[in-house]
Length: 243
Ligand SMILES: N[C@@H](CCC(=O)N[C@@H](CS)C(=O)NCC(=O)O)C(=O)O
Image (cartoon, rainbow, N blue to C red; front, side, top):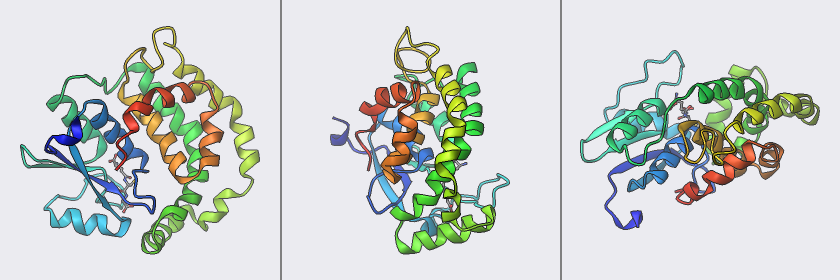
């Protein structure tokens, strides 16, 4: 019944031509909102509109080393009139403001998986995704994406797809090993820590959903692996609100 309640949160999300959430980082927050049944509404922003919009709201730039100073997810918590940018800070705020049901934000296993997944799966998965992300962006957002990403990777986005099949095949063992870690508590339930989701489950499901919205083929490549597959499926009930 969440939709009938007045929203307490405005979620600034990244727009795509499918008009649903696709950013893996925004998905982490959206999964938390959906799981906790917090009433919220979404404002989708195209890449080139993120900085001007958030600046206009009076949000200070991120203090991270990244050259990109304004990012989504950003939330406006209406009852306290607080604006929060950066997913880690948003997750902490949601957990302390809406503690029931709880979402453990960290765990030793979660940290191990996040770092291994970033190192092993993230690189190859990221290439397959980044190269295709432009396909679901408006022409202006696609242009912004190219102009900000291509100088960093030193080549055209399409070139990331060179030897794609071979790269995935070579990573098979490593992907499987991280999937094995994801199944450590499978006797207790489908999630990483057992029968309830943690933030790391949302990290994994968000990454897979990002792939799914961008390209079903890339999603199939990763979602066939044990571990990823069970966590993604267990998170599906919390992915229903996607806009
Ligand atoms: N450190 C940020 C990263 C979020 C992020 O990278 N968001 C991307 C969309 S997925 C973004 O807003 N990019 C803005 C841009 O490229 O100008 C967080 O965890 O919230």
